[in-house]
Image (cartoon, rainbow, N blue to C red; front, top):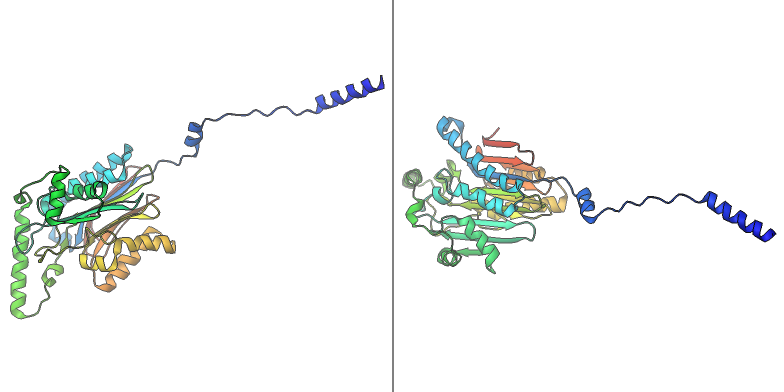
Length: 355
């Protein structure tokens, strides 16, 4: 009897002291992902060239035209990003807008060489895998940035040039145009002015080849850097090069690490300026490297490279860049740089002159 009473007491004690079962909430993997997913962030920044761009030399009509085209171009890329498109697509389509405008030294508005031809360069880079493509010295490809992307995605190479690049463009069914498509009266007049300056300088025996070009230069390269909602960075650059260039001269625009660079770990950069110096300084990559190895911000890195390193070499120009958090910088050491940016809040920024 005692055993029965003891056993009953033990059972009663356990029952009275048993803690209520905790309610377990089952959360689906989809919900978990949504809970942990960071707020969508994206952004885009573009340039249309840097140089001696002064308000006193700009008519109200021309200034309005530049601003309108910059706004139109940046909004094209921004819309792609806002709708979930990739940074590569945004970069390519944005640059297409600038290449198709005679206002900028790329595509339709390309400057003339010494031989009165147009030789176009471009490059693009994917920050997610460091893949890149570039072309140089093409004369019949309507949109060189498209060809650069084809080189990146559909060839085993990074850089193609001249007739070989044009043959590849035809194989990839890109739009081919007659070289006359690139002719603009303004660019021809610029060539004639530069040649006249050179002629006068040479008569006085006081010139280096590019002196009269650089003094009043507008480095009309166009470029774009973007961050998409997937966290991927991309950058691209396109140009007609330098007015009166000789000997199939190639600048920094198609050189990965100089004119263009993108790395998801840091930033995406597009350069514009005196290309020889941007190549020597490896400007675009150097900005990324400073961020990666020294842990500095994008703004700090861009200022260090453009205002100190590049300037110390004697180089002029600028960059636009965006980091993997969506921070944007537009750094230049010239009197002006055509530029624009938009962020995830739809905030638009357009500039031409140095503030």
